[in-house]
Amino acid sequence: MLFQETTPDTSGYMIAGFALTFLILAVYVASIYVRNRNLQQDMDMLAEIEEPAVKIKARSTGRAEKKKVKPGTKKGKK
Amino acid sequence: MNHKPLALKILDVVSIVLLVTAAYLAIVVAPTERVMGDVQRVFYFHIGTAWVALVGFVFTAGLSVIYLITKDLKWDRIQVAAIEVSVMFFLITIILGSIWARPAWNTWWTWDPRLTTAAVTELIYIAYFMLRQGIDDPNKRARFGAVYALIGGLSAPITFFAIRLFRTIHPVVIAGSNAAAEGNFSMTGDMLQAFFFALFAFTVIFIDLFWNRIRLGEVQEKVEEMKLKAAW
Image (cartoon, rainbow over all chains, first blue to last red):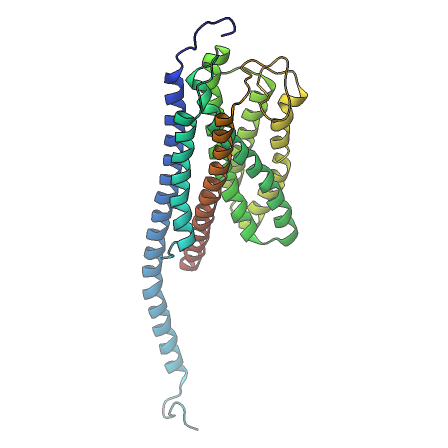
């Protein structure tokens, strides 16, 4: 390029450069969006699993407390 | 569901506007460089992305120190976000440099000190994620990651000063000159405008992506906690 008389046509390289920049940025933004969406789905699913598990746990602890109360005695009364 | 704060939504829009404006200034407003032609226009984005990536790498070294002092996993989460965004920007820097080098140096790649240190820096931070994936314990993972990023942080200033310390064909555009450089040029007023605007635009875009990535890390942590709870 040192002893050239006219400006070379390097527009193809320029277009490739800007296109790749926008592409990489778009892919990265999309990856953040997709990862976030997948995590939100996981969170919802785990919350659904957790809910019945908490209910079962509460029921089983309730039964255990009932069993502890001796027959003939009323709960809460001396 | 955790909703996006309004400030972040505004920053998302501002980032897109700044990116488009920076591209407009670089492609339309800035004059065509006489010797290299249109390919010189990628220089504005090349420097803009390099600036945020290298500052990001140094910033993560600082976050390592904070984590090692406080042992708070919040700083680890912020560090991961900063490194991921910096790696992405530095990849753009390297690709744009390679595209510029083809017509300017007649090669896509050469093992010049600047190009070599840049490639090593990028690989160091890609390896950071590989290291983290191999460790299950969150505290151990954060500690190892912090020490690694602290040492890895040295690669950023080495990359920056490589063209000032060694004989290299890479041009020194800011603060200095290099007799051996091929592809040097001086900037006109419009070129400087596009240059400084690109620096500003990529700084804002970095902050925006960094914030979004931190939020993703928070959700990731929440899901991990819920998974552990469900396993018990």
